[in-house]
Amino acid sequence: MPYDAPKKRNDFEAATDTVAGRSMRNLGALQTSELFMLSAVRLWCNAEGTPCRRALVRNGFHAVSLGCAEYMQFEELMGAVTSGAKRPFTAAVSCCAPLMHDEAWLLECLALIQHHRSSETTELLSALLPAAAVRVAAEALDGLAAALAGVGLHLRVRSLIEPGIHPGTLWRHALSRLVH
Image 1: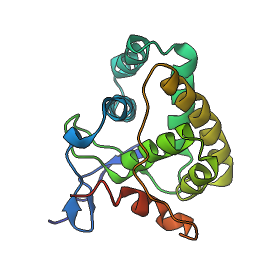
Image 2 (image 1 turned 60 degrees about the horizontal axis):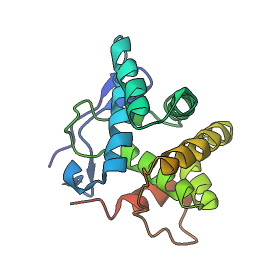
Image 3 (image 1 turned 45 degrees about the horizontal axis):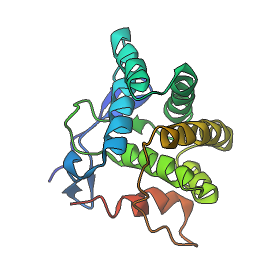
Image 4 (image 1 turned 180 degrees about the vertical axis):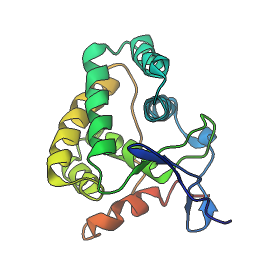
């Protein structure tokens, strides 16, 4: 399957993404909590010039009993990830598109921190973000993950991250169970 060149959109890119030449698994394999966060990420990333999309994200947070403070943590996280990244953050434009590398990376970060695996989360964040952005993202992730768990939105850790794996390859390793 050929790789489609990304279309540049400010701080992130929209592209068709593959791992090892295969499309990412369809969205039916994701849990409700993962779909909620994926939808929020996609709406946030594609909200350029359409403030009503950010309002949809905020309304989604309120619908699952998350308040303005949690939405602001999400905003901080997305700001750190999109503007502080070593390379552009890739998010799908379509709501029904297959899961992208960076989207899966972010879901994995949330799951790891929610399961009190902060050192692994920091390593995973370091693969894409510089040190200053890692600190901002880790703080936002910590608060957001706790709030998600507090309303019953638990994310499943999908990786089997082994000690000694280079941080630059962690996100690929984390995605290995999502590919097909």
